[in-house]
Structure formats: structure tokens, C-alpha cells
Amino acid sequence: MPGVSLVGSGSACLTAQLTNDALSQRVDTSDDWIATRTGIRQRHIATPQDSLASLATEAARNALAMAEVSATEVDLIVLATSTPDDLFGTACQVQQALGATRAVAFDLTAACSGFVFALVTAAQYIRTGVFKNVVVIGADVLSRWTDWDDRTTCVLFGDGAGAVVLRAAERDRLLGFELCSDGSLNHCLNLAYQPESEVLVGDITVQKGTFAPITMNGREVYKFAVSRVPEVIEKALFRANLTNADIDWLVLHQANQRILDAVADRLGVPAERVVSNMARHGNTSAASIPIAIDEAVRAGKIKAGDVMATAGFGAGLTWGSAIVQWA
Ligand code: UT7
Image 1 (cartoon, helix red, strand yellow):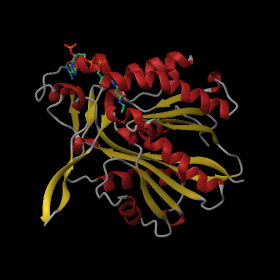
Image 2 (cartoon, rainbow, N blue to C red):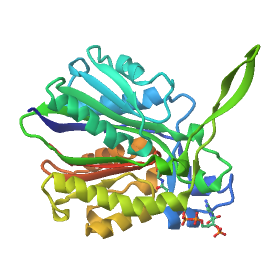
Image 3 (cartoon, rainbow, N blue to C red):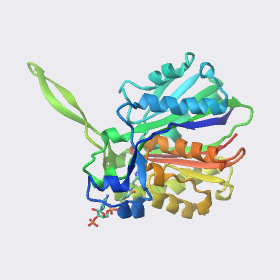
Image 4 (cartoon, rainbow, N blue to C red):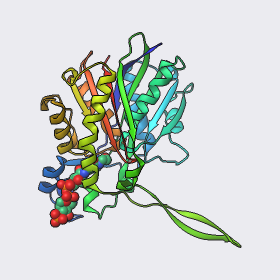
């Protein structure tokens, strides 16, 4: 069975920065409250010139350059996003922009768990021998769907895109994984369709409308994250035949520094082994893990052979962990 190797990472560079102080001009909040409760100091916001496709393409292009894989060698593109440019899917726009003419491309939606779910999904195509070179992208522009007058959510989110390149290899570096869903908690975090009825003709009524802005029960999601994330990482480690002591880097979905600290504490991972870019990016949903990986790789922190315990968690509710070794 072919193995899965992670051979490149990339992210998109967004220039517009929204600081906590700037946000305080819009809603009743403060830099002190946001930084103390979440660890966030600023987030990046997509400009009207950016699109989900353009950010995802930039991240993928950078990952392919690091991997030294050309676009025409790519067999599959999986785009994890909850904020597509087109509800029919955005991955094909990315395929076209990259010039990945041989690749099949599709979107995958699992909110803030999207990157981990996409990584594991993509890996199955490699393990079965179907594809050799796969690009996995996590990208979100949550600013489109944020209620900028709701201080309980708008301070948390930012926009971004990150990507990795997976390659078929002799040695399997996806060491273990575990994915979970619990729809009974679906109401805790939503970006829900907001229907408006319109009588079409006679007794036929159709549903039109858009999506309501993000709503979240922050306390419930917080409790869920600090209990379920350590558990799912330990299950994935067990499948990898590893223990907590084997974790070189803890790369969690960047939702809240307090969650990162609590999970690290529970797993006994020292603070210097926890990758965090919360302060600069906020919560970028499906993009947060690949951006964190890319920044840590380019900073020379994550090195060849290092074991990363990644974990995503969020709407669905969904959560999952993948234990991967950097090639
Ligand atoms: O990516 C998906 C996963 N999402 C998450 O993991 C998010 C998980 N949840 C959290 O990170 C935290 O629950 C939050 C950061 C969202 C909130 O922190 P908290 O410590 O749970 O605060 P809270 O909701 O208990 O609110 C505490 C107080 C409230 O005031 P009262 O009722 O105590 O008077 C809020 O009204 O803080 C108030 N508050 C704010 N004050 C200033 C809430 N938001 C703000 C704000 N600025 N932005």
C-alpha cells in the first residue's frame, strides 16, 4: 500500500489587518478583553479584490513551489471551506487558476475541522493507489458571514488560506487519525440558511433567501473543545502506536489561546511545543491549521521527521485529529 508524505506547505498573504483597537470602534469591546479571553490581537480581512478562489490558489501555489511539484502533476485538489465563492463549489476555479489541468477538484465542508477531514480524505486516494500528488487546501473568508455588530463572535474570526501537498511515498507519514461528528450539538455553531417564502404560482411556494450570519454558543463550544480535543488526539496517537511524549508539535485549530493551553496541559505538551499564531490571525476556520503548519515550517521550527499532532474542531459539531510526520 502506498504511503502518504507531506512534502510542501503554503499560505496566502493578506495585507489588511484589523486590530482589536480598530474593532473597538465598531463594537463595545476592548483590546484587553479580547487578548485576555482569546489571545487574539489582530486578524486579517480579505479585501473586495480578494476571493476565496484567489486566496486558495495563492496558498496552493506556494505549497507546490515548496514541494517542487508542478501544477500539471497534480491529480487531486481538495478545498476545505465553508465560505465558497460559489455554492456549487470553488475548487474547480482553483484548478483552473493553478493550471492543474489533469486534476480533479472538489470542495469539502466540515467548518473548522475541514482541513483535518480533507487531509484524511485525500490520503485515502493515495493509499489506494489512485492518485500520487494531491493538494489539500483550507481556506475561509468568514468576514463575509460575520455579524459585525455581535461582539460575542465578531472579535474571533479572520480570513486566510493555507495548503499542503501530499505525495505517494514508500513510507507512510500519516501515522494515525480519528474523525468524529455529533449532530445533536449542531445548534451550538451555525451559519444557517435563512429561507424566505415566495409564492411562485398557485399553491407552489419556493424558499429563497441567503444565509444568516454566524451564531455561536461560545461557552458550550469551549467546554466541548477542551474535553473532546485531548481525547481525539489520544485516540489518533493510539492508532499511530505513539504516546503523548512523541508529540514534537501540537498544531490545533486556532480558536482560542485558552483552548490551546488547556489541551496542551491535559496532554502534558510543554508550551514551547504548541504552535500558535492566534495573536496575529485570530480564528481562520479551515485555514488555521495549514497556515500554522506553513509558518512553523518556514520559520524552521517544524523540521524533517518531526511528529505533529493536529486537531480541528468546530461546527457540526465535528472534531478530528491527524498525527503526521513532516517529510
Ligand atoms: O472555531 C470554532 C470553535 N469556536 C470556539 O472554539 C470558540 C469557543 N469559545 C470561546 O472561545 C469563548 O467562549 C469566547 C471567547 C467566545 C467567549 O469567552 P468566555 O470567557 O466564554 O466569555 P463569556 O461568553 O462567558 O462572556 C463573559 C462576559 C459576558 O458578560 P457578562 O454576562 O458576564 O456581564 C459577555 O457579555 O464577557 C462579555 N463579552 C464581551 N465583553 C467585551 C462577550 N464578548 C465580549 C467582547 N468584549 N467581545
